[in-house]
Structure formats: structure tokens, C-alpha cells
Image (cartoon, rainbow, N blue to C red; front, side, top):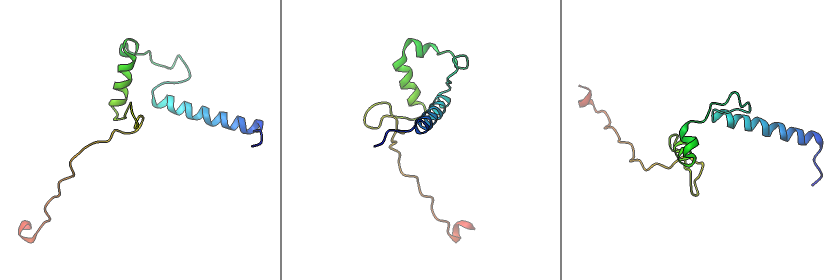
Length: 90
């Protein structure tokens, strides 16, 4: 492959920076330290537990082959309502 041009490197850096800003925004963080909220005591005292809570609340797997993906749920199939009949309608 040919060496990338300066414009290609700049475009890649710009796209990467935009994605980083989006991820930080979703996490309630920013590149400006003055804008970031101070960490709560759980994050400071128990960072691993805080990480578990942070992924469990929105239903994201933290460990294993499905790490970072939505948690699979074992839910019963939805109940089917009986179809209406002329007798039911009165």
C-alpha cells in the first residue's frame, strides 16, 4: 500500500476525534477537564464495582464473549389475546 498523504492522515485524525467526542459525550464526559463532573465516591473507592453498575443499569454485558453488547434476556413469549368473536362483541 502507498504511504498515506498528509490530507488522508488529517482526515483520519478528524474522524477519530469526532468519534472520541461522541463517546465521551455519551458517558457524560468531555475533553475539557473543567466540564467533567467530579467522580462519585463509588468510582473512586471501588472502580470495578462502578464499572459493573455502569454496564448493568443499561443492560450491557461486561464480561465474556458478549462484552459490550446488549444483555440477552430470557423472557416468556408474549401472551396472545383471544380473537374477538361476534358473541364477544355483544
